Length: 131
Image 1 (cartoon, rainbow, N blue to C red):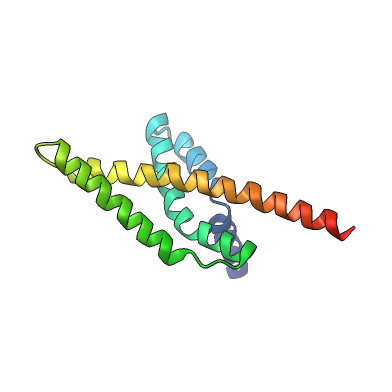
Image 2 (cartoon, rainbow, N blue to C red):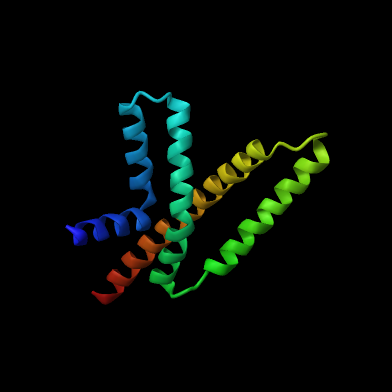
């Protein structure tokens, strides 16, 4: 039973799209509004992508990117905070954090799909070269 949960957690970390769809379906079954369900699914998926992108890059090309990714996320948060501070009279923390987190979702989703496409292409090319 513990082994099953280990495989389940590993699958969700490696493939956050499964987590996105699962959370979305669960929220819809609980009759949560569509935009709230998508937001919650995106929030959970963003957290998982913080782990899955470095794992994918490490597995495919043996590149360690966790620290540069965390530093980049910190720089993005600083830039968003600075822009928000300069453009608004009063900063609101919750909307600012939500905006930063959703930007991470867009950035990480694009990065994740590029990694998948390049990884699959690389695997196909390697397979073709073996034959």
